[in-house]
Length: 454
Image (tube, rainbow, N blue to C red; front, side):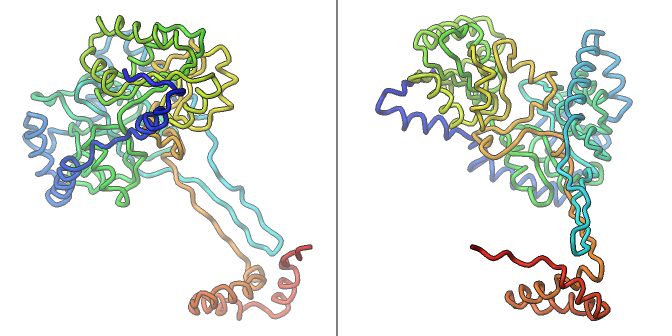
């Protein structure tokens, strides 16, 4: 792991490089390959999907029907799990749904103002969404729950999932299918990569076009999401997973190391950072990371992540550590400090904050309640976690009476003519001409006048 000290004159430059991490995997060859795939799927539809499935996933669906799995397959997969597995999925689903039902939409209640205009903002669910569940080196049934359940709570009409089948066989693991059953998914398509994103965006004879694509994926998925944005909406561009652990001098190095490795085992490009004012905690954490890596099943992946992208920063004090955490804007922020709860109010830029040593990030990954789909690569500066709001859109509603229109008509005329848009004013004038003169005068008198500055 890279080791930094804020007292070192070269710290700022080194820290800037760490903070500048990002999903740069979709540059160059990846972006170009994704462009070709997206264009091909858009042009050839199912034929392209079948070709890419044979080429990239190593199995032959035969016909397009071979990539589709419906509710019966999902129900059977759920029934095939051991009782403990069914209970775990159901508990996770319940907690995720319970949390997201507490969300409040940004509706603006309908109100009639002084001139008689009734204005409001209403919220409506999307009609159909497509969710991506990664495959590859690991399976993520939790990602199905964390995306599909907020969509269901939002009232989305149809939820479909794309996930690559097992390479060479095309089989779909029962956990992913069972999660689809629990979450209320209507269909799963055994396709992955940029071709899956293209199919969801543009539609094929088999895969329906959706309104929004959500969920994490590899570099090709991220590149394709960028390419189709505008044709459909997307949740975010998800980069490699990351965590920043903020630890005081009393933190347990074994717990700190475990949290760092829990992220590192996702991907060699995952980012794990420790910031602490304690040189002792920093040194002992390095020892713990090495000790715990020795028997970790995914130690090659985690080891590469820790070696190439891990970092430990020793700060002057806890206040500086908090400032550095906010600068980093992590996907996951774990607070290993006695004053953890009090520190939350000092944090403004993180995807999710895990308060205290009894709240490991792994619980958030599976069943705490909030979705684990979070902004990465520093985008927590402006982006938010996936939620019910992700699957809804706002709509303004305007309802003016003839007298209300007459009251604001002079101001509309002034602004429209200032912009040189005579047609805008005429669209108002043709209506105002129908309003009785007395009503126009009465309403104009009531129209709010600008206040004089004193």
